[in-house]
Image (cartoon, protein in one colour):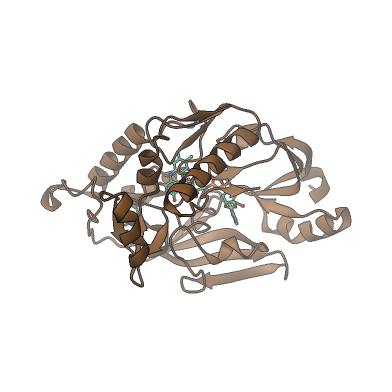
Length: 330
Ligand SMILES: Cc1cc2nc3c(=O)[nH]c(=O)nc-3n(C[C@H](O)[C@H](O)[C@H](O)COP(=O)(O)OP(=O)(O)OC[C@H]3O[C@@H](n4cnc5c(N)ncnc54)[C@H](O)[C@@H]3O)c2cc1C
């Protein structure tokens, strides 16, 4: 089929974003064949329109009218070469985590239950329960829309750090496959406070997964019931001097050692200290279950973004700390 016959116009993204914003994309295509990616450049330059990538929409805030060519990558295949496993960008992240455990590979169990696709996992270096996906990525295979060819980035090239990677600055790179390096030698990672009650001798990757899924269910509201994109704010990374200043106002602030004499402090603690848990503004509110999660009841993005700005302003005014947004605002 010709590319032009696969492109949909004025395509509703309402079911493609977990905030359930009633967004319409000017053009939309689902890619099952690499050849189609090679031909998109022609179309976008003729129409003078920019492209953007959408995975499962679990970390984006969309406008009502998205005047872009939206590309969704739907490669799902898995290939194995010893302990290197290459997965298509369209595969669901948690289905892959379960697949690894069922096939005897360990490492990804702490990242169980994170929504979204394989292709998006390196973008913000997804992390949870003391683990980050960058610890397991060998290579990210991308299609470069500028040079119109495949390029491969090794782990160092990706410049991973806390909720960050090179992909957030390189708009021309579309992730088509991710190569993971996993092991069959189970080394449990129980350093996170919610897990350290588990006894090393009695656990398996499946037991860790089960615990994490249970905790996540209890702590984070289900996006199908209360549309949300998980944490709306990153945990701020500050210097030890700044930590001392905060401790004078909030002696019990939670913090974790980071690199280069820096600490990561709990954004949730800051928000809760300002009594903002459960706070509502128009059709958006801070979740009663988890103060980093903002729930949306509107078909537009304005209310949730206003609520986020209100929280950022309160934290800045009271603690002189900038809370960075975690989702991508389109
Ligand atoms: C309930 C809930 C809980 C969550 N918990 C966590 C958590 O514990 N830890 C965590 O890190 N995140 C968490 N998130 C955020 C989210 O799950 C991740 O960011 C996930 O990786 C997003 O995947 P996605 O496919 O939905 O990407 P999308 O939301 O569709 O896109 C996110 C970004 O990635 C880009 N992108 C997507 N696919 C590609 C591709 N193939 N190539 C290039 N760019 C691409 C998009 O352009 C966009 O900028 C949570 C979200 C929800 C809703």
